[in-house]
Length: 243
Ligand SMILES: [Zn+2]
Image 1 (cartoon, rainbow, N blue to C red):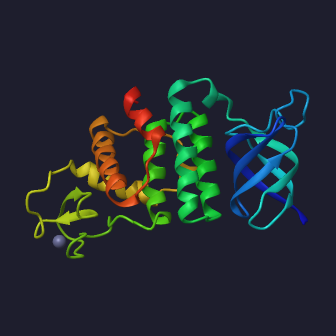
Image 2 (cartoon, rainbow, N blue to C red):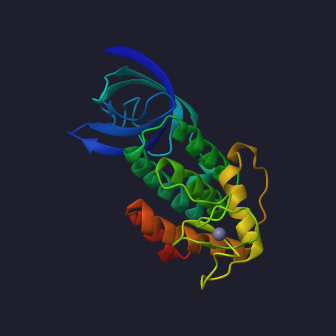
């Protein structure tokens, strides 16, 4: 057992025994790991305030490979205060935490940490939660092993005359391959590709047509259902709230 230090974001916290909690933490060094926070349920514990979802900090732990590590300390970097004050932001963020837990089960990749951190930083800074979430959803498809084809036609590979987007075909469709797919706005075709390549940390302002957001949502909903095999309760919750 050795001491390790890394940056991490708490994805979930589960009660364990009378007094402790087990944290699921997305880290920049090991992907997602389980950390035992001894005594975290006690009000006076130094761990009680940091053993909650959305805590972002520098963690020190006794690290055990493929087993539960044990928490030594957390230096909090951000608690994402604005997210906690707003129902829309917290609902999207909870969905993201859920999505990252599930994605890490398929690919426990250290890169996931930066993606989640950047997304939460932007949502906390009042950048449109729905758009940030869509960008993350597009990017996560690579880690889920079902990358969309949005550089060229998903059927013939041509990059000319792209006319629409089809989740059934897995991405773009060109004029020659088009049969009876629904035609989406030309902006939707362009923007979904920008989403895929954009560096979230560089976004300072987003203004996207409602119709484009709607069409991308439609594509992603169907794509996730069709190819990822994920069942996300929190996504259903977003739909129910009509966010
Ligand atoms: Zn084609």
